[in-house]
Length: 263
Image (cartoon, rainbow, N blue to C red; front, side, top):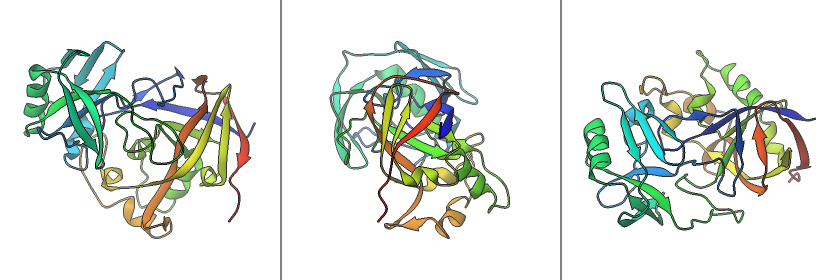
């Protein structure tokens, strides 16, 4: 055993809060329902915490049929997912894809919450990853994000105030790889599942947003920039693609199948 799986997190609504899972079936698109829903402008451009930090305060849950969203100062949205609505052309990070419009009631709820006209869409169709031959729903680029628990411990040792892992919105957290140990891995095995680390994750202003309060500061980007900058980005964690599917359960042993070739 090279490590232990300590967290599983899915994000059914893009840029909303995460759902901690005890166990999940890994799919080709990542964890079940991850980024299946997204808010877009009337023109179809995706909205995220980059635009509205208070999206961090949205607490979604989804069982494959009913999307429930709680937010401070608002009555809960209880929405039955629509699969036969208008299919809209939408963009995520300037990449085109499609989503099924979820109707006027859901649109009005989110528009009132954000004070900005928007629509809720549900993923449909096929969207390939930029690299690695994977597929994804409305995530920025890849179906999984893996971070070593010790990477955060090392970062927190450099900060005046420690930050929780949710600042980085990982899918999987692994303990035992060591600080930034994920950078040196190409393939991981967890049970029957095999995951390939495809590219480092470039971090943005979302990491500076307190996921509990929606307030924004300067860290951790200021500190990360001092020692984790390369390829024109501030890197923390690894974007990944599933290569073999299976059940993932918190506490599972993690095996390094192949290290990343040096150089």
